[in-house]
Image (cartoon, rainbow, N blue to C red; front, side, top):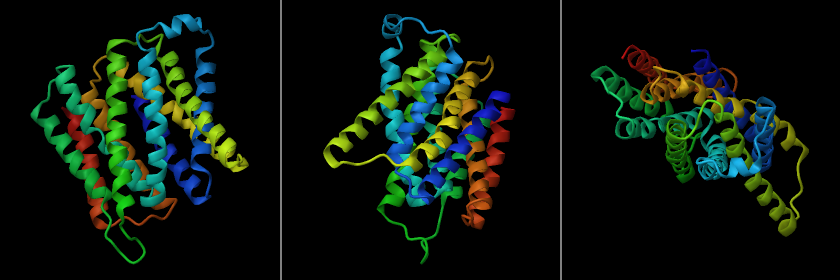
Length: 289
């Protein structure tokens, strides 16, 4: 249970960091690149002893880790844009609505049993995140193409990441290797980011902002924990992915919405509050099942 709570805490901190990046007009890509560099350093501190490069390259999961790294930096950038256009609550909810993808995948890939209670809980969870995300079109909050487009991309991208991560954990990773796997994932994302920044510097003379370092640190410290603790939970006996992903994701939605309301003064309507209440009900149903 402690790993699940830490996963929820670190994930909520990420959305807070994204909000601060948007609020302080920090270069998003630069902060994200620093963030992934920090994640690699954190992973190295946890790993301590490294096998040879030849061993890592020849593991059955190495190419999968590289593909995940490409997805990570892409979806992370889109999530930051979602916070910018739609707010913390919507970004969090879009990210966690993706639970439907790994949950459905679990039924087909791992033959997980879906009791009527769990199915009801998952359906309530899907309704809950939609209600919690809903915002009326007002004079101060105009809906546009970006408002809906970026959250949709986050839903699809995050769902693919969760499903692919679970698939690797189930088929390729041992407990001793999953931190090494994370280092490769974050290292790939960091490498891609640095190459883009170097290209921008050469072609556009885009300089590096000092603000990006601080915000990148703020983003990177909890970001490593989100994946580390999530994989740790998935590795525990008795915790199926059809239970972990809904409970983890909906709890993050509730926490992020409350943070958005209390700290950043994002207004939540009655419809949003109903969504939060339904989220809690969904968690209880899934846990009981």
